[in-house]
Amino acid sequence: MLKATVGSVEERDEEQEDEGEEELRDGGVPFYVNRGGLPVDEETWERMWRHVARIHPSSEALGREIRDATDLPKIPVPSVPTYQPTTAVPQHLEAIQKYIRDLQYNHTGTQFFEIKKSRSLTALMDIAKEMTREALPIKCLEAVILGIYLTNNMPGVERFPLSFKSQFSGNHFRHIVLGLHSRGRFGALGTSRREDLMFKPLKFRSLMDLVQDFDGAYKGYWHTLHKVKIGQYVSHNPHSVAQIEWKHSILDVDKLTKDELRKELERHTRDMSLKLGKPVPPSPTKDRRNSMGSPLRGPSSPIRRISRVERRPSGEKKVLEQKPSTDMNGYQIRV
Image (cartoon, rainbow, N blue to C red; front, side):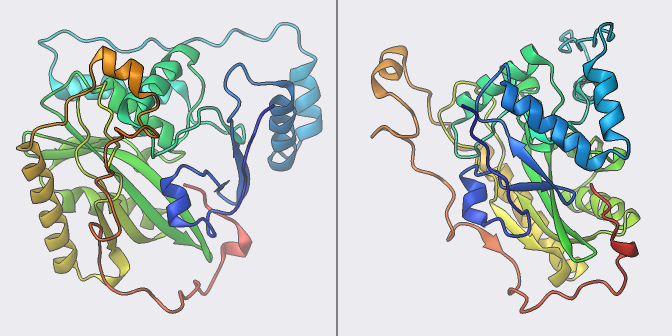
């Protein structure tokens, strides 16, 4: 049977988030994580139709029209992008972003692929392969895993997780993209309802410029950006049993001056560059892989590189966050 968890983004515990316990709301509307694999079962289908009934103004008529139809058009399946060795990096990244966009943003109320952040890179790459086979709509975290998979064969492009926490009308919203760094320029891949909260071409001279561009996009939707979390560079080895370091630096943007934020981002950029000079732990041999069992549970599991001590939050916790004076009549602008 399908197992799913639902809850509030605002109440989600940070450690639960690390362990992949997706207790989420999609812009105020609960959504579920499909833990039963594909194809989805009947219970999941019915729950998705109930989701339509909650959010669509003419849900009952629309549902009957679609479910009773016998000649629905066949949905085209996007082709995984390929490229020649002579293809320039910007064009290759644009092709990857187009593929992610062609999969479409998932509005069904159910995230089809379960992404646990504590899984090894090789396990997450297996999920990415499944995404390309199924060609289903995805959400932002799935897009990050897919982006890593599709850029593994681009050694000149470094990838790192870049996540945001914003606030609108008293509610908090979380979003994540895949940060990019190549030849001294920064950019991003991802998916979102908003065009300016996902793809960023490799044109930003610093991490500060990239973060400020996202901040400006949030302000355009009356969101206040409170926190930015930045991970370390992700290995290009798809068979690595290491875990992705999702939150090496945690920055309270609203508590930092512009100069302080720039210094923190410059320090993180230096940390990422230093990591490139360190040898990557080798992946297990075939014999060892067969004998060690799960890389997350066996005695040979790699020690997690991330800890509360290693993270560098900035500023002190607020005692009380002030809600905006107006709430746009309760309307939630979802990003």
